[in-house]
Image (tube, rainbow, N blue to C red; front, side, top):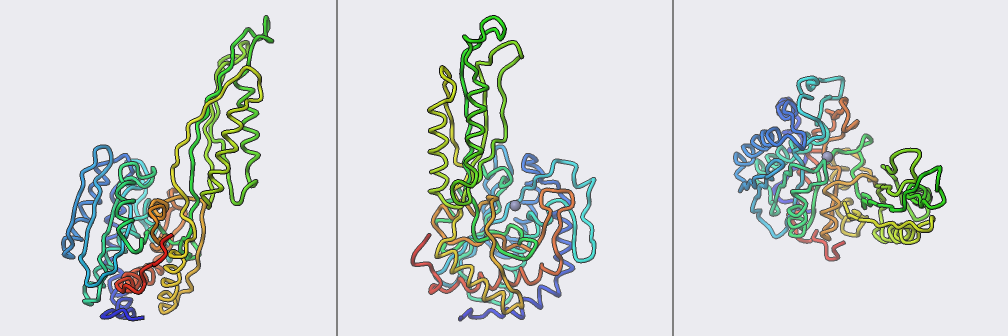
Length: 395
Ligand SMILES: [Zn+2]
């Protein structure tokens, strides 16, 4: 494969020499609280990234956030017809004050700290990979980097820009952490969030119990039936995460509420499960009760498309030249990769440095994975400069 002007081995050596600086930069990023709801903190991370992209000569755009932090995009024109979108989020799940209590620390081959793997190392690897490519004067595709401020709560303010930038790209690379075994992520489940309200008729539980119509009972039957759908369709999970209803023991309850989510790798499975739940809602088990529901599609599945598979094989080949055996994982968790895939483009996720225990105080990144993963990212971007890799059959 012709990746003109780009030497993978040299990129890897440069990254290795720069590893102490990478870790110092990671410490700076991790040392800033940037929970999704901490707009100022997120924007301090954005400030640093923005400065680095300007130094690299990118065209930088910063779209101020109303509620959340700013959306940062950095673009490089490229030398060929190919194009790639790189995505990394700047928010973490940790509340203000976490950093103070929990500084980044080294432990053997790990650096531990809030937001290390998920995903300040991923953000940083984008910068380092691009710097390596530009230093070598490699042929480049058109590159757009998107750093969004709200991925950890489902990207409410940035989902649209993720979708529109994705649909303009030949390939989308998402820098969520590599799995603990080093795998990248090639498929993610889609998620529907479903709320159900049950309505019955209240009555005195002692005087005229028979006049009552229990919304709690009707909903309880529905909950059991919905949970019973687990495994009834391929890879389907149903989780009733919340129920509430009624008021006091001497009143037949006329109101109840449940909130559940369903997940699956296949869009048809999700829609099939939704149909079954809708039927349960339309035919309550307790006569005289009624139910209604509201559905929100949180994410469509990132399924294993032909284009995605080709992208993975391309990455696997480059990884092999770096001495890595790059495995592929499908996961039940969603990311912006779902949105990118729903835009019909080939997506590869989990390309960041390897890490684990995300969303916990002991979150870590594996130091020895930083150089090969970042070199892999650079190699993949260089390879995408060539239009023969364009996907003729988008997902
Ligand atoms: Zn993440």
